[in-house]
Structure formats: structure tokens, C-alpha cells
Image (cartoon, rainbow, N blue to C red):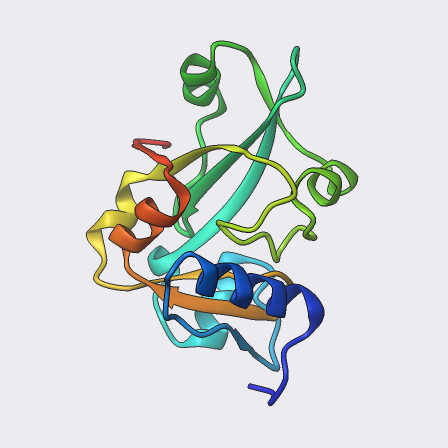
Length: 159
């Protein structure tokens, strides 16, 4: 962990503080871009990684954030039923434009606009989980209850 945070990670730290969350953002020397890389860098199980995936409605282009366990794949048909329109995974430009962050570093909070948020119920099986914090090297530890509280996300089965 470096002594100072990069600008995106610092932004996440400030948002966490403003939300009353005491967790600390850490920047690691290894990439945390994928759930597997994050688990290796942190020293936890892949299931404990809260990966933020951005989708968009195919008709409305409305952004949808799915925070999934690192071990799970999102069932896009199920997501389409939940949001009442077909969905597709957003590309890098869309993700940066709508969230303010790059793919691999999208945190659960602090986005450029409000996102409809869904949380994988499998994350609730763990005492502690880890989420991205603004860039592909930054993470923070939290509990599933804190994730639900800070995002206001709807807990669902995503697989």
C-alpha cells in the first residue's frame, strides 16, 4: 500500500467518509482488475470479492450496477426481467462516462449519477468482503450489511 492515494481512490475514500463508513481504501502493488486478481492480491477467496459490473438497458440506455460475488456470473436474462427490458454489458467508454471510473476500478458508491443497483445475495454469506475503490489497484474491506446500506441496492439472486 502506498502512502498517498491516487485521485480516483481518494475520491472513493472521501465518499466513504461522507457516508459515515470508517473503512480505509488501500492501493495495492498488484492489479485488482479481475475478481481472481483481486483475491490473490488481497489474500481472500474469490467469493469475497464484490465485483461491480455495469450494464445498460438496451432501449433506455439507463445504467445498471450489479455488485456480484467474484465467483458468480450474472444471468442477463434474469437482470432483463428485473429491469423490464433487455440488458447488455456496458463498454469502457460508457462505464467511465456514467460512473466516473474505469472498468476494473468501479466502486459500489461515488458514481457520477445514480445507478439502479443490485447486490448478489451470495455476498451476504461472508463476514467480510472486498470492493473496488476507484482504480484497478484500489480496494476496501466492508461487510455485506455495509454494502447494502451504503448503496441502497436490492439484494437478488443473480446467477
